[in-house]
Image 1 (cartoon, rainbow, N blue to C red):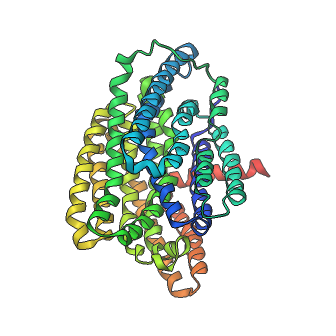
Image 2 (cartoon, one colour):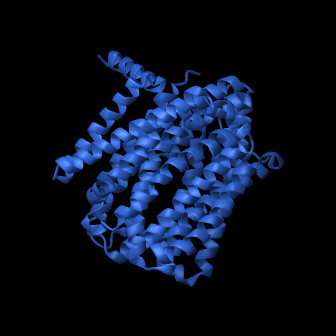
Image 3 (tube, one colour):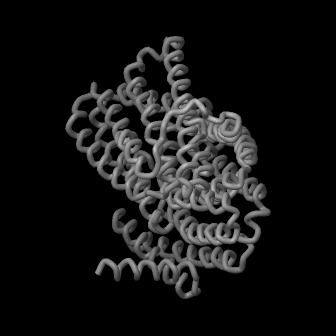
Length: 487
């Protein structure tokens, strides 16, 4: 099978992530004006509630399937047997998730007002399982996924403006959200036959698959608690206003992190395949490229967001959310630590079958984050929540790196890797200078932001070229090749 290059896959997956982020940016301002406050409240609660059952149905299977399946993708019979077993386990977990959901709706009377909306969102549980997106990740078919996303997102936006017209239309908005998220997953299941034929089987080999999936599942639960605890504790110790301020900065932080992590996701099946085949030299080469490329992107992205926090808040939210500026400046540092932590966990520890270390490190970090929130929030409010996130992300990065030190040592301490880091730091100094000059030179919010971004990119790229950075030259050569092929 002819596989696309990692750079092309990274571009496609990054573009798909941007589409997923653009959808709420376009829809939220419209929906917040059309729907009633109570309608939005029911929508948000129902969506959050269903996510827990999607987590149960997922059972950590997608991550495990990519790691294990990457080893079999060149052996069709083995791959079909493996995929059928994984899909069957996923379906059983989906049935369990639905049973727990229906049981909770019957038991908890407080949920009765949300039943209709919850049931609409519950369609995501089944269709996420049927989507078998892990197959496309294993075979690195990001073209199909991206094209599908474009069509579905455009269709969803059109439906939103046509059908959501009055305050009572929150159920229609929920249905459109479901369509946007999993609308093409039946087609996914059918299209997957281009790679392999999946069928339900009673021979699921539970003994082999269950332990690693449960460990990854436990890690996912710990991450969910870790991510959700910030807002929950802030709401308990402060008020809705503090939660609103923090939520705005977190949403922007997650958008930036999501785009960068999308560039990372495409490398996971390739790294899992190489490690599974014991092709360690090639594995180290790919891992080195990942660290080099992301090293050049993550630092300037974080520094740029720190320098332009006020402008970003005012453009994406509004002036009434200006208290979020300092919170965003603090939490932007977490982008650096979270991305490198993810490299160590998903690109090294999980392919190396050390998911037990990922679970241990995540649980410890989740506990640390909760304790820090209780200590910092009473004094610093939403800024304290942001600071606790930064400290927690730094901790888990160090712990994950230490857990795979024997694997990453030959890559991390290479001369080229260290030079790449130094070049990026020097380039970031240029970004700071440009942003400060634009702040002095432009009064217009939009002009200041646009010129800051454009000149920062030019300055950063020029510094890397002057420093003869190999990764920068490689990116420049690829860009030239793409331009030549289009002309």
